Image (spheres, rainbow over the protein chains, first blue to last red):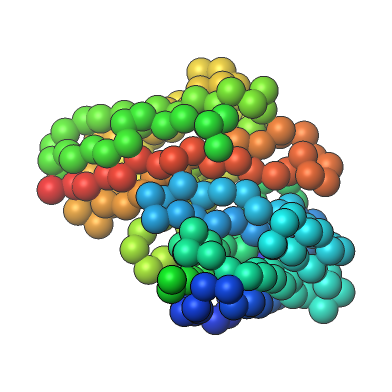
Length: 108
Length: 116
């Protein structure tokens, strides 16, 4: 099955800094999502991005499907960005495979 | 998102108890999912229902029994659980018909389960 790897596993930033999170996947995928899990456990959709580039405020994501990776960019980070960022990739409609996540802590 | 709700939010149960987790989605979706999130492990897909029919059972032990009476509701019935079943149980939903962003999954807040 598809393997999904995320890096780095942990990241500590000062408020205002920029960061790039990476997601590698081992096979072709039709679906790819990025999520933010807040400290209370809620998973929040950030992007549905099986290919191409999208931006939403301070966040943007790029997926290069032919090279099997996706990047999540966080600019001007804020303390509220803290949490765990997950990439989930899937070959078809229902089955997403989640990576182990990047745990981000933004310091004031 | 408030589109998917889960109850209870926290549950403590003994190994001999029987309890149920409930999920409800208000998004008009047809596919619903149960995931398990254990400490230091990726989210694991447990079950998928599409138009009330189970389409995926990811080798889940029979002490977990799902039920999907309609496209808006999903239950997970629990009996004779083990301490290692303690985890965050997350429900999600999606449109249920394939095609691009319709496969986007939306998650509920989860039920944090502790088995004593």
